[in-house]
Amino acid sequence: MRVLLLGGGGREHALALGLAADPAVEVLIAAPGNPGIAEVAELRPVDAADPAAVAALAVETGVDLVVIGPEAPLVAGAADAVRAKGIAAFGPSAEAARLEGSKAFAKDVMTAAGVPTARAYTCTDPEGTARALDEFGPPYVVKNDGLAAGKGVVVTDDRAAALAHAAECGRVVVEEYLAGPEVSLFVVTDGEAALPLLPAQDFKRVGDGDAGPNTGGMGAYAPLPWAPPGLVDEVMADVVHPTLAEMRRRGTPFAGLLYVGLAMTAAGPRVIEFNARFGDPETQVVLALLETPLGGLLHAAATGALADHPPLRWRDGAAVTVVVAAGNYPGTPRTGDVITGADRPGVIHAGTARRAADGALLSAGGRVLCGTATGPTLAAARDAAYELVGGIGLAGSHHRTDIAAAAIDGRITIPGQPE
Image (cartoon, rainbow, N blue to C red; front, side):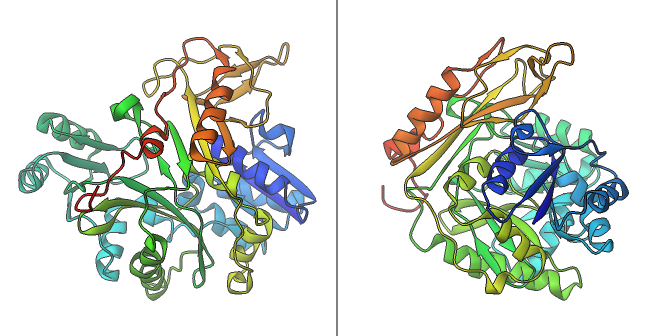
């Protein structure tokens, strides 16, 4: 099988490693890729935001499957353009990708499907936003209706800050706050059949102890030792299958990767958000534990054959990833600094580039690298991930020091459950 992987971040490097390890994948091409992905795939230039260009590259390279990593190409219709050329694509149509592209649309689908989620209002003016904020009270949750690269959500006790974020976004969804630890569940689906992957937890805030502003994610771990038994089955029954049925009813079936972001509240799991693609950095830990060949799994979903796919197999143990971020991230990041120590197994490239003059590895984004490791226990995996991070040299960089610590120490509790 010849596979084209679209994207160039940490998620795509993790996907590339998984695809390259599948014996059925004979040729792996990535566009545009990154220096880490270049170690396992042929890189090709492409404007990922141009569906016609993506489809043309798929035809030119003669691939059997296109795996679309980022959300923006999906919302723009890249999967539709590829499928129109008769090539299988892993990723939802532009219409189905609205589950991520519009928070208001996702809420409408959840309401119609009876999915448990937070009460919410879609607001387009300051007066409506103010009424919604006053009804729900603090902490205030204000979400940009459109794509915002993982940084469109503000959760704050500061009403003025909530109003300012809404004014900056224009159209927002104001929600009631859901109290409880968060879970990320990836579900591979062909629109009918659906296979859940291992639940993971990521860390959105920039600083230790969940301090500071939201980021695209500063680390993750899997599995979740504190998750209640039966959680995945419950979410599949109450969230995933009703959502897929509602999307089919609307004539826009969702096929690809449905990312379900959950809050474990006193009333049970509640959906915070849907995404239409693998999450970053959770992909790094989930795929590190997946024993089932990735290429065959994604091809089965892309061709409507998922019901015939064998059960997924998982490696024993746990995985942890720690993000190394550039100076000033999540603000405008410091870039162009030389990186050392990134050539070891387990170091995932997210925002890197090669200097043309001498081939030196440079920082080229906010989240630059991820130290990703597995181990027989969560504590062992965490130690190994931090050992990787400790060997990376990047001037001005920063990372959280508490990834997975609370889970290891038994400090995560679900509201309403005995400690």
